Length: 160
Image (cartoon, rainbow, N blue to C red; front, side, top):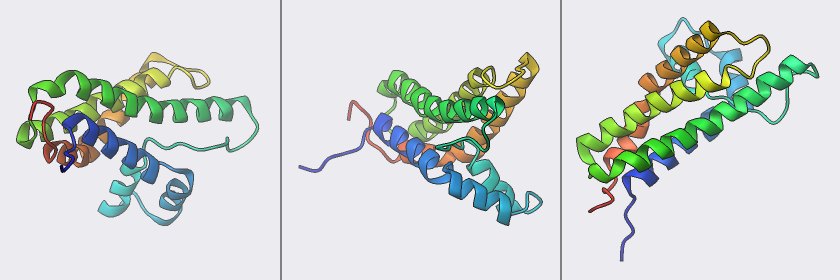
């Protein structure tokens, strides 16, 4: 018997893969060293590595430690929030165009919410700083969410 991916599982796997592959420290450092945000490809790669994560801070300061915690927690919350959104809504979607839009919008909302919440961990947090972080998160979801949308759109619905 062939196993089919559910909309929820496909979206979670796609989101986790994006975060793990394109958000890791070596890839992120390579992108910022070797691309320019003035080119379309460089700009897209920089957006793609937005939910970056690392194993250690850039230096020993408390600000760097808080930044590390915020970045790592943001990446984890992004995956968790996508899982929650897809888990709640996916029962009504059987894949196809509905699954595509569900996956895409789930990443937009999840990334904005994860960015907003973790913005209060960094040193000297402000409400406007949290709104700007949510703005960057929603931009990530808008321009990268189609990948998660494609994964959920090609999956079978939970009721199928």
